[in-house]
Amino acid sequence: MKMRICDAASFSLALALCVILSQSADVRALEYLPGVEWPEPPVVTPADKPGGAPSDAIVLFDGKDFSAWNGADRWKIEDGVAVVRGGEIQTKQAFADCQLHIEWSAPTPASGSGQGRGNSGVFFGPYELQVLDSYENKTYFDGQAGAIYKQQPPQVNAMRPPGQWNVYDVVWTAPRFREDGSLESPAYVTVLHNGVLIQNHFEVRGTTFYNEPAVYWPHDSAQPIRLQDHGNPVRFRNIWVRELKPIRGKQVKSPAKRIGNEVKAIGGMQ
Ligand code: MG
Image 1 (tube, rainbow, N blue to C red):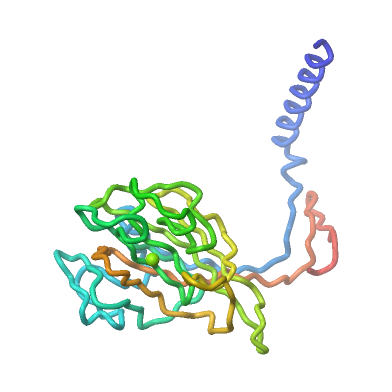
Image 2: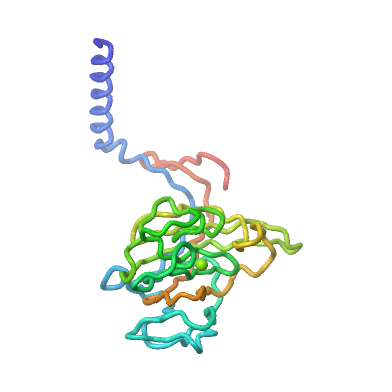
């Protein structure tokens, strides 16, 4: 025990010394210089309210019309809300890596059970993020709300009761294929359900069919986003998407350290 107290005292002393040293002029004069030239990140104005579309978002549905979609002839808009009816709909624009915000509500009163209760889906190309009324409604776990269908259940069930609004915030990384059609990099998906993380950078294994194993076949990385008609009048609202473009820097100098007025390279150009 004595040893432990001694260790703790030594550690505290070392920590105190670090704090004192880090505040000294000599240490502050030491700086790591990555040597990378970065473009300035674009300015984006966030929405006034949580869940609102930021300034660089493409609004897919704001309650007025289906002008961003194909196949919605028979879908209905009721009080600014889109209601599933008569086939799937798909965005006119295709998206590769993107951030999607979509709000959905299961039919009320609830009817049916398992996969027959409030079933729809958000598809990125041939890959489905399940939409289902999973509030006190058991089904196979890799088919409940928030599952990557038949591949991965959500980490938790963050479902709100039928009639209330659920929110999916999705970060989608599209798969890439080589010229010969082979897979270069798989799709990844991160999903928050009502603000709760349910898929964390999950590596998608391929297509998400009911009756076939997952497989990748080559396609353009950019695909329409589709909303499934599974025969249930699921409702959607406030749908927007942002195309994701990583900031890419250029290594213009060797990484270096500045010590006082002197700059010393610490390795070759990367
Ligand atoms: Mg579905």
